[in-house]
Image (spheres, one colour):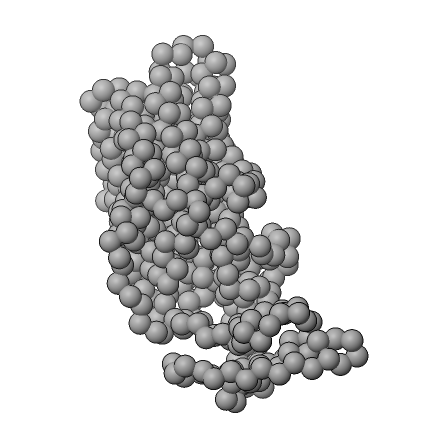
Length: 486
């Protein structure tokens, strides 16, 4: 990769040699993880698992408990979405204050806050007043979301710093633990709820989360070791890029589809007279398929390089079919209602949600670098990570709210059919966009041949010349010539 930097006139010749700099390409061999990196990966994976476990642990039983307290199904659904709303709003703020506070304090402080709030949430069962129960549900859940946004934002920066040459691989591994957390959460929650009632699931997960926090004090790198060069473009500038906008739409749609099930699946399965633990196992099946296929689709995405957009659009289309089977849809009158049909549909949905979601981070990053002219540095990666987190949280916020409202108004089969139609429409729209975008890129590639380089060391010739009051710096490396006007 060729990297150009602006140079001041008074910089010496040694600094000028940095105008043309060799950096490893994606195809070059990457070293194995060091012991320190393995420890860091273990800590990050543990946090991701406990985080999403805490987020999803209440899905099998909270709607029922909230209804018993007098809350409507739509309001109970908004308790789920409020968590995502707080993350959506606060993630950019934490991204701004991160350089001042430091990566490690923000990461550990967020973990501790999340664990404490989880334990406190488990005490809500002792609140009998409807209004107080509703207020505390939102307040405690919101505070827990602030902790989650804090360590999630810092976690992206830690990945970039601890794994500078393996960021994509590590993100795929961590995404697997996200799927495991989402899958284990409802199963663990349903089992612990059956054993010890409402509070036990939150006490257990909150305590484990708190125990993880002090370990990170000693095992993760210090703030001084993390490069805090976070200068980058703004959210406004990256959101002007068409490919980024379309990818953000896909992310929001996929996360809306996933989160739609949080407040709606348990009432739908209630008709089959299932216990809370059995409902938790069904949630486990859904997220297990996501966790199993996430690294597979990540590997396929890497192999497809510029054609990974096919996975995103196909994932949306196949998710729509899965949702139609899940009801089953009123349009599919020939299909009888069956528990086995629901299980098969949920399994397919977990597979295709992973398919649609896995290439999205790389799609936003490529859009920023290729279409927006952003520099490939820590600042850009932090910006992309923050945007991805915000948009995904937007979907997590809309999903439960929309799902609860549709469930209350029309019932689950029609609600699932409506989400399926939106997915299918999104698949058609995004397919058309990426097809013509790829066609345009191919035309540009033919007209503008790309620069190539070997893996040998380069001898760089630098010439400086002043023209019309401007400093012209010309870096020559074999057949590669670049000029910077300062």
